[in-house]
Image (tube, rainbow over all chains, first blue to last red; front, side, top):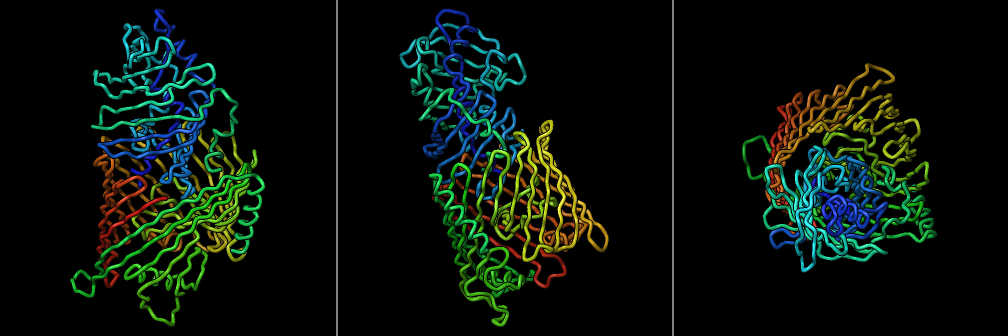
Length: 252
Length: 371
């Protein structure tokens, strides 16, 4: 039962997509300026969307669908809509995460030691979803150079953790030099071991911005697995009722 | 029951006015098993087979302010599964629909004797409630699960949820109640619940204050149990210190007699692909306070192993230290396909020296498809 609880997932997708597919950049300027430009493109006051998560493990694929809304990087609410998890809801407030199971009418606070587990069996951990998008606050950034990713010119940015609260000790980001979205990212442990990687498969124009709408994540600690997360009906910076991010909303 | 149905219909009407969204889903489950029950000396008559085929349906209609939820379960039981239901019916001395919302066809009759019919139909209304949500308060009426648990198995501060341990994992049954919740900030609430039962004086009435304080989920509760003739006051918490810790304590003061205390504490931790959890439960009230764990000292431990991305294995031990009974179980759960699970289990139960047939060994499958 506990295992099932652990595997249940929140696509707190705002945090996930923004967190793993991170940071922005602009031509030639400093890494900080590139990240600032990325943030102006990818960061949001609020986001809502319908999401689909396809988890592939050794040729077997499972899917999860969800509706999500998030406010900044600290508050997110997700309700799953696929048959297996229909009505399961996630609420994230800061570093705290609760899950609501409708059949049991039960709300459970996720234990801290479980936050590194993959959500819903995916390659995205609770920790990934909970991490703030503010890279400049947690990492020192440097521009390593330029490199083409999928035929598009990208800035390669290296982030080194300067705070113990950072989810990873080192990150590499490849940021589209024209659209300022992250096209590729790699996350490393202190030992230098590659832990996780992401690749943006599709980028959508939302209003005046470019936004990664389909991202593939792969945990390098698990063999032959990947998770493709896609978003539709994306709305950025639309007004969101703050009561969505309360315990009362979980069981509504 | 009539009031619940009336509330449900009112909810449906209300929800219809608000262009609600509807969802209908459920699951089909088959649980075949083989069992030995005896003194420990094997005989052919001690072996039996049973099967439960279960259909669960869940309907929800939600508008802006109102929500109607219906959850039902119907099972065709044969062999030992039918015998278990028949024996439980006899123990509860009920006929037809009882307070737990269980319907047995054919209905239990003491005159029919202890031998169960070879096949039974068992139906249960798990939930049937209307919830009205306003900005400053929510009101829920009908059959619902009012769950105050912190621990995995034992929750002395939870007065409304009946624990059903007959299945592979604990199931908490709902109760007919009226619940009023006043949210206090984003994570707090003041909770009032009334479950009048057959008469007001025999009902249960509770007030609970809960919230997240400096990273600690904590609550305080006071309730009156008219059926037991006692007032109870308790507190519970859950906190993460790398290791996750939870605890509950409850003091019950009967109208006549001596007060008793029940308390539980637990911890869980994960390392690699393993999760370990343990709980201790002290029941100072005996069988009257908790028929599931009548002994003073009880322990529970489980070790889960994520063997692969689709397969989880767990070993569990529930030890009634004072009563001398225990249950050990090994379960495996396979995510067999999209929306389909396959479980297998083996468990051994020792009922204690007072039982003439203290040993039960059982093994079975649990096949579940959700839609």
